[in-house]
Image 1 (cartoon, rainbow over the protein chains, first blue to last red):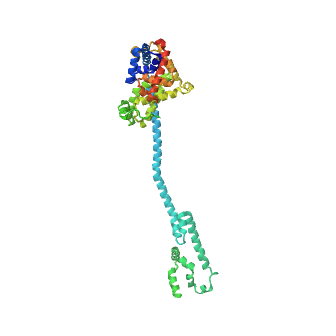
Image 2: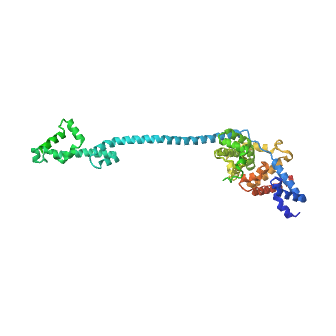
Image 3: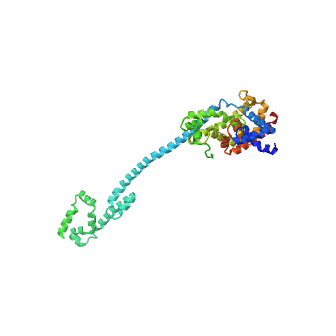
Length: 213
Length: 203
């Protein structure tokens, strides 16, 4: 048998000993070693090496091995539990956040309407004022105050004796025909103020004024 | 990281260890304990061939089973359980032997003292642990074999230990090492050739 043939067979000899060859390869090896004493001896040596490996003493884990494993597993489980706990806390916070946010939004809406409502009522007369009031409650309050002040200012000069024409002094009922009085007449609170002060309602005065005209 | 499925699902599902792993996945901690009891000794011995000390081998084996424990929830039976287990073990051992030497010096003193006690124990052949005619001649032969094994390239060592010591088929070794069967055949051949040469006086 040639050395080249034996060399080519070397890897298969080890696999042959390990029982890892397919049927066809196994047949080739068997045929070769039947005629090759060198390879037959090589198979014997490879088998002895395998036997030595198998015969190596196994070490036994120490008595503490399982206990250490148990402690490490407990530590890992603890970390995992902590991670799960953190996740749960985050989830709980998120779940509580929804109603908390809704409650906050409701409070904000109530606060907003409590501020914007009166302002909107007060500013219903001036065109466009309501939109501003709805957009900014603080601005609405400011505008409501300004409006009341403007009403007083608008009325005050008309009622000033220096500005009144001589005809009006002679016929004071003509005052009810002034545009500013007509506008003021539309304000609900103006009538209320008059009633609170015991004054005669403007409507009745107006009726009398018409009869005068 | 893992190779595509090499075994049909039905084949891997017939593996009792796979069934245990699936039970563990379902929340049965007892199944994990069974797997640990069944395979931990083999993994300690496998690791011992790489690190040479029992304490470190035990630590590595624990690392391996911790990985199994952590991977339980996402485990998919794509192969035999032992193949998957040895793949984890091989990676752990190869990572360990690639670490700088100073890492071993940092270990607690208790491990070092345990190691010295262990060397004395290991040096004495245990007649109960030796099988039939493959019994070792004595301390010298065992020390020589371990010395030669320790000098083998890690992939050759892993392939040789898995196939010869743990009795794994080349196919399973290939999957554990994530290489071809042909590569395993070559690794085992070269490792065997080195051992045969180095241990010629004992053969």
